[in-house]
Structures are given as structure tokens and as C-alpha cells.
Image (tube, rainbow, N blue to C red; front, side, top):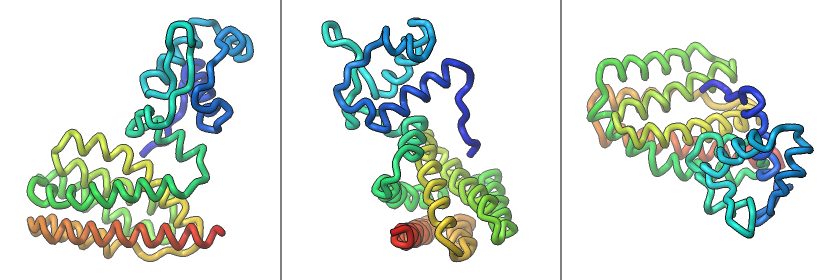
Length: 234
């Protein structure tokens, strides 16, 4: 997954506004002073409103007559939006967010592996094998290992041929990347190849139950690794 970079003044403005919301500088219900904000950021009111439209589409702000433009409560945010997820993981030092993402993985990925065992075509199988090969050659290189891990899980979701699961994959990828950073940053980690190989072997064998079980075991181990990494930071 390539790192997102805001493009141009519009992208930078969106990022700046989002950061203020995520940092709780603007808490729930805060009414934004648009003229003052426009002057502070040194942009046109039109440019500011265009940036606010982006955040409104993500459920982070709303605008009402007589009330103005205000920050929405978090339960109104589009949590599956990749920008919203990226902003949260970048702004929060709360491991609870990663716990929630792990719960999503526990629910989704074993079922995805079951479906992949039934539907994966030759292109899918080749992509999974290539990702596993990259994971093997990555060795002790954390960055290469993370890239290969993300590629494997993305290939798994692609192999389901389910467009809704492909959307969920974006969230899983962000959560997985943050988890990998925390785990690798806490010291040496176990070799991820064997657990991923079990998943691929079950998919190659067209054994849905075995694929589901192997992926459940993989995600469970991932959760345990995350718990250990969090404890090491205390």
C-alpha cells in the first residue's frame, strides 16, 4: 500500500482541518468560524468550503442553517473511509483502535479465506504465491516484510471476487500496516511465513474449512503478537 500524500493546496487544507478534529482541538459540536479560519489559512472562502465539503462527505462535519458548520460526533463518521482510518491511526496513540481493527480482521479474514478457497483463479493463486515468496525473501527486513504481508492479505481479498470485501480490505490494510509497525518496532518477531503458507496451501487444495481455520489461527497469533508489543511499550 503506497503512502497517501495530500496533493496541492486543496489536499493540504483537508489534511489540516482533519488534523484539528482528530487532535480534539475541535471537539464534537465545535462550530467553525469560517471567515477567521479562511484568514488564518490564507485561502479563499471558496477553497475553504471545498475542503469542508470533503470532510462533510466523510461524516466528520455538518452544516445547518442558524447553527453553522460544526464537528460531528465520531459515531457519524464514515469509519470505513480510507482517509478517516489513516487520519485516526496517525493521530491516535490509543492501542484500542488497533484492537478494534483486529476484531474486524477476526470476523472478516477467515471467511474471506474460505471464499477464496472456492473462487480463486490462477491469477489469484499466482499473486498469493508471489506475496509469500516476497515474505520469504524479506527475512529480517521489517519494511520488506510489511509490504509482502500487506500484498498477501490484499491478494486474499481480491481472490474472493467480492466487491464489498475489497472495500473492507482497504481498512484491514491500514490496520495491518499499523499493527506490523508496532510489532516490528518492539523487537524481533516470529517468522510469518509458516502461518501464511498454511493459508495458501489450504486455498491451493480447494479446502474452504482448512483455509478458514488457518486464517483464524493466523489472525489470533497476530492479535497475541500485538498484545505483547503493547505490553513492551508500557
